[in-house]
Length: 394
Image (cartoon, rainbow, N blue to C red):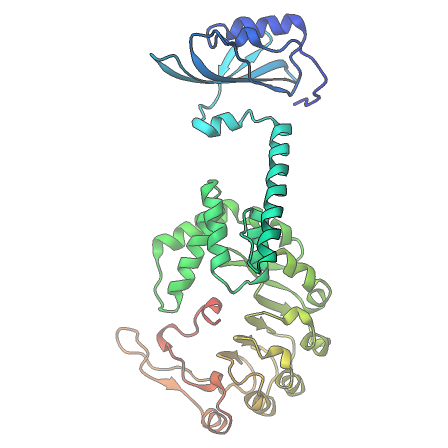
């Protein structure tokens, strides 16, 4: 479409438009002369026998001149609504029959809309400043503010529900998706799986997931949605050190899976990028007992709820260091699968219904738990559903 506002519709084309509009609205003759390309007009005639909202917008495309029109009227006898397009040859095509305010918004004047948005921003800024001077938190009125609130406090459910409500009121599918994932996360700890909700979650992801993840997708090797937004990323350790701050400004990331080697582990353990993470996976990095000792003495890990160290080379000396660590004492999950030493207790036997009837523990498990008592060496609280999804540990 040609949006050049200074271009006027030729007189002969304007005459065709007026003739074609004759049986649609009594207001057609009140169209502005000249009729400008891209400009929205709301013609009115005071002596008209009907009351109506009538809007038109002229434009020009590869097929020539066109006039989009919308008419919402009531002549006391009949309620009518028209939404169509007229071509320079006089042909008229019905367009989708939008309902109510949504149909009229097709013809909102972009300049008027911009002015209104500016007026609202100025008003909101004044209100916010007044509230701040009184020590109050200003309300979040727009999508940007709501998304920023989630970045500021990824753990909180309230800002996510607020954003979901905001988007639902605007018929945006991510509103439904946020509510859906929050509901699924709330039931995950019980081991309950809601089939219809899970199927709907997958439908929304197939339809919109790539679009919602677009700001971050090209910067990572993989990503997953948690609680309605991209919350888990997989990428090389080197790239996380270089881009971690930027990535966490793009999405409320709380779960990080790092790949590559452990060459820069010491830098990672003092990195501010670890702040606020719920889980960290260091799978297959070639971690040794010395690396395990570094992890055990890193205060930057004391907020974690899940630490994955599977498929490494950690033996008993490294495991002893991890068990004695004051920074990992309250850690619910420490995964040491496929290491030379793995004393983590796991569900063992099952009855005929599949319920766990025994927990496998080794002598080293009991020794370390007796001396140091780390949470990750305790028996699972929910053995039938162990381990729970990562978002359950927060």
